[in-house]
Length: 147
Picture 1 (cartoon, rainbow, N blue to C red):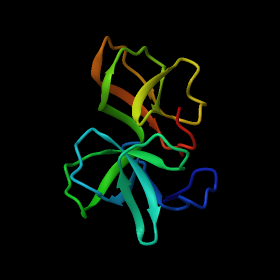
Picture 2: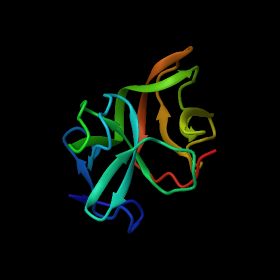
Picture 3: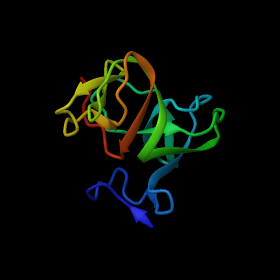
Picture 4: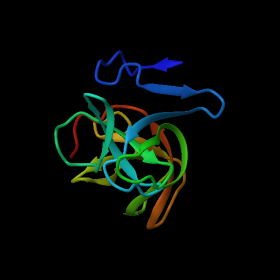
C-alpha cells in the first residue's frame, strides 16, 4: 500500500507500510557498506533513493536504519517507521519518551518535549544510563533542520 508523509512530493509513494509487523521501510541504494543498526540519511535521486551519512545541514531528508550490512551499490532495505530494538548511537543517557534528533551530524537526546522539533526522528522507549544502543520508535518523518 502506498504511503506518503503529508503529501510531500519529495517522498510521495516511496514508502511502504508493512501491516504484518507495523513497521515501515524504504529501498535505497547504499552509498558505502552499511552497518546494521546504524542510521543513514535517505535522499531522492533521479533513479530512486540513495543512502548517505547523516549530516548537520539544512537539507531535507529522511532517516532509516540499516537492516543488513549491504555493500556500496546494493539496493538496501532500511526501516523508517515503527519499533526498532538496538539503534546504534553515540554514548547517551536518555529517559523514556525523550526524542532523538540530529545535531552536528550525530544522534542527540532532545529531551521530553522534543517529538515535534524539526530534527527529531525517533522516540526513545527504554531508559538508559550511558548506552550506545537504544530501543526506539522511528517516526518516519522528514528531517528539515538539524541543530
